[in-house]
Image (cartoon, rainbow, N blue to C red):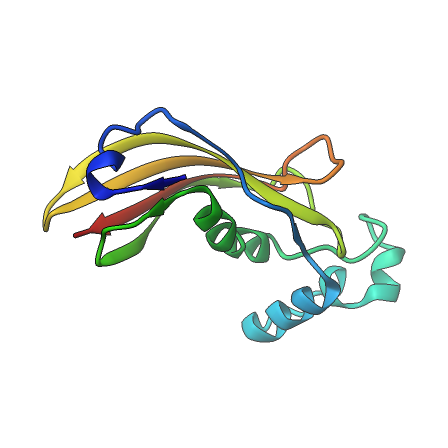
Length: 149
């Protein structure tokens, strides 16, 4: 969905639909492990992970969370602003692991829009990161973002 700053004020409660699918490859998992110094075997040791609790390597929960940003930008684009700020999260859970090679997408709903100082708007968005073919989501989060003119 595309919206202007003024239109955004009226969109609280709007279902934003779903993003496209994004593959979480083993290469992406390994790169994230290198960037964060988190080389736990369940993420990066493919052979050992096959014998582990998930039957293969899985993405880091924080990798899944970091992919919320590119998925989110497919759901809402506020056009006439000068600054977009990731303000934080209210709640995050990881109900199911993302297996290496799985595809994920985000579904979102704009829960609230409120004015903030500096000619800005703060949004609260309810997001669910779905795993293709899975019964449980990979991540459930409430995103806070700010937009300034």
